[in-house]
Amino acid sequence: MSSRLDRVDLKILRLLQNNGRLSNAELAETVAISPATCHRRTQRLFEDGFIAAVRAMVAPKKVAKGTLVMVGVVLDRSTPESFAIFEQAIAKLKFVLDCHLVAGDFDYFLKIRVGDMEDFNRIHGEQLIALPGVRQTRTFFVMKEVVDNAPLEF
Amino acid sequence: MSSRLDRVDLKILRLLQNNGRLSNAELAETVAISPATCHRRTQRLFEDGFIAAVRAMVAPKKVAKGTLVMVGVVLDRSTPESFAIFEQAIAKLKFVLDCHLVAGDFDYFLKIRVGDMEDFNRIHGEQLIALPGVRQTRTFFVMKEVVDNAPLEF
DNA sequence: GATGAAATCCGAGTCAC
DNA sequence: GTGACTCGGATTTCATC
Image (tube, rainbow over all chains, first blue to last red; front, side):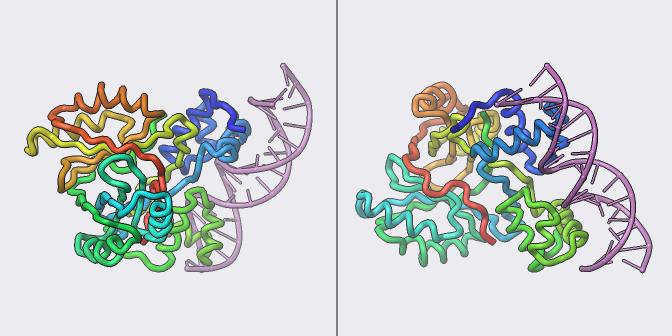
């Protein structure tokens, strides 16, 4: 099923991670194999699921999503049912970039992108605390994005 | 400098965000304009910085980075100097995907990807608590990734 | 079973309009 | 903004190891 990766595969993965628009010809030259082979290798990386997707990273500030907020969520009850219902509801909120079930003082951690603080306050009041089973939320406004979404190192 | 976006531009942005490998021809057909026009539009979106980058999303589990951890960090002192030194040091740690300066109970929030818990424990002991000015860290192991890195909605 | 050379075909990028 | 034209790359075929 999941075949192993050799040096060349890893090189291709890293190159495409840094620039998903590299042409097959450029890739082939950089990793020093023929275009035909490179094409086959790359195709296999997609087919075998090593590359989940290729995405254009839209600059958040350019589309009025310049404000980042982290939110810790505690539910009323820690039952599988509560979790399932909460997760279903979360999936519909498009401003939620991350939602992770965690061990510790919170049940969930959310990473949210909105236009500004006012925007967030409205969303918080109307949508977050209204989520099923939410006992409390703790909001951490991001004052500075030091590293956001760094490429995976492997 | 930062020109306005019309319907067509927004469509192109959203399409490329969902599939950064769409050819210009496919794009043009989907948004119902000529390839030449589409090409110029897309080029402009890059030049004007609306698309910061195009990246292949490598499946973390496939490259032994299947364990996600959120870490809250408190520094000894909340001075600009402490912050600057900490941020400089963080930038060198390749396993840190996110690092955000936040308002609230913590100074920084980190999002970290490692191979497994053992891996994290080593890193925590050897690298995280050793970061300059760190008073304490609070670790939140992610037990379930409900939503990770969802595409931006705009 | 993988590779690279060659051959075909299609899209990128540029032009005039 | 469109349509046409040219060139280079994507993709397939095939012989080879």
